[in-house]
Image 1 (cartoon, rainbow, N blue to C red):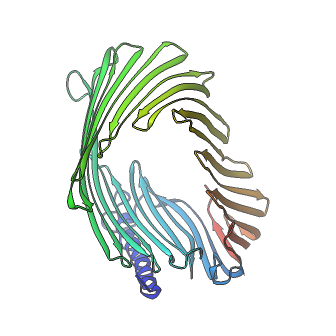
Image 2 (image 1 turned 45 degrees about the vertical axis):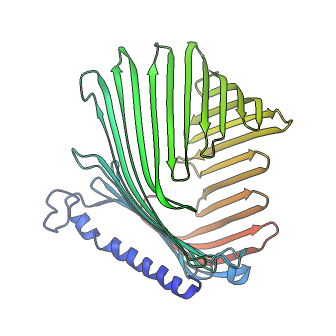
Image 3 (image 1 turned 135 degrees about the horizontal axis):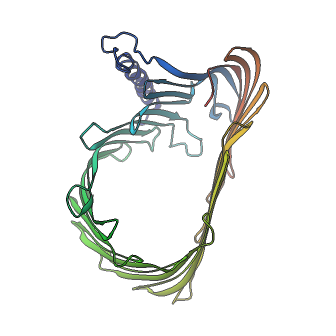
Amino acid sequence: MGTGAPRGRIGRRLLVLFFTSLASPLPAVLAQAGPGGGDGSVPRHGVTDLWGEFSVSYALALLGGDAAPNLGPIARADIAFSVGARVFSLTLDPVGIRRQGVSFEVREGSELLSITYERTPSDGTDPNVGASTDLQALVVAKPEGAPQLQALFAVQSTEGAAGSQVFTARLSANERYRDPFAGFSSVDWRASVQSTRLLVPATGVDRTTVSFGVGAGAAFGGPRSRSLRPSLRLDVASDETRAGPGVRFKVDAGLAAELTDREDLSVGAGWDVRRTGSADSQRVSLGTRRLEPVTLSAEADRSRAADGRTSYRWGLGADVALTRDVRLGASYRGELDEDGSGHGARGRFSVRWQAAGFSLKGSLHGGAIWRSDGELRPDLSATVAAAAAGGGPVTGSLAASLRYQRRFSAALNGDLRVELGALTVDVDAEASYADALSLSGGLVTALEVLRRDDASLSLQLGLEGRTTTGGGSAASLDLGLRYGFGETR
């Protein structure tokens, strides 16, 4: 892992293998897409809803030299089509000399096949950390009369002297049965197995962790009776500590019950048993809707760490729905541990609004705890998410979050598309702050120069860059052609 050349070959081989795996099942998938297609003939349903965009361009470095986001020839594509009930999509964003991003999806109802590959160059801030490569394959299947199955395989690789590789494989199954027996409204279960291998060549680390998990739950009662919902989950994993390898057991048991038609009770307990010691926790909460539209709640929990340190927390809260989309809440919180005690308050506000082609969701949480040693621990957070979609000329989305808990952090990302006749402008941007401000984004404009039926040819100009306060900046400019066909989503 200490040299970049072998890693580059591995990345390219994975990309070739990825495209080969995509090409192999497609004829069979297309052949099975409709009645009469089993003999390999063209399926009766055929390909429908076909649309897509291709672009080829050449990028030049404006800032940062070899650290520029894009260099040399670049290809991008976004294709989607349907075959019967299956929806296929392929995205290349981008595929170039330094960066490759590929995703392929097949959806049919709740079933999914997804394969993604991404290679990102180093930002140059740490000479010991090179380019990163991520490969992931996910399958979600629901055979008739069988549980839902999910299989995941992922590889994460980082080049450079401080590089590492992580291999993850996971298989899980779950099912829920409605009204399986008299007195039971539902029974559900889940099971999973996961293996993770970590390789760090610089330190000689080669560690494999295997974990198993099972869980089950049930709901008793029905529309005219009070419900009772017990649950139990067990996780077993290999555990590597300084004392040597061992086995870790985690158990979580819970019970939720409707005491009356307006009061709900929830209790639970958990145990975490390791070679170095065991930890446990207990929790209880009670809620009432007797003063509607105000909901009152009380909760308490106790936790004991593996070193024997014990802590207690409790709280009282009230929430009110001012309208269907606006909620207010306030709560008191208390805590007690071996370092002292604390008391505080917390308030919350949430709003959501939806109109034709536009949606908005936001929340604001704020509070503080005053500790017995005189320390004030504030905790403030805010989130907002907006999306505009529809038949208008402007579409896009925006998400932002702020957090202050002893230090300030923030994140913002968004994308925007504006269509003005023959001109299309796409903008995406991302900003984050945690001790330092990082900015990155891109701008792509396309001017349509030729159209025939549902196909068009456009000139494309792109600009992409990134910068970090106290660090470096890089930017690239690319010019090329874009070809589009079919109706856009």
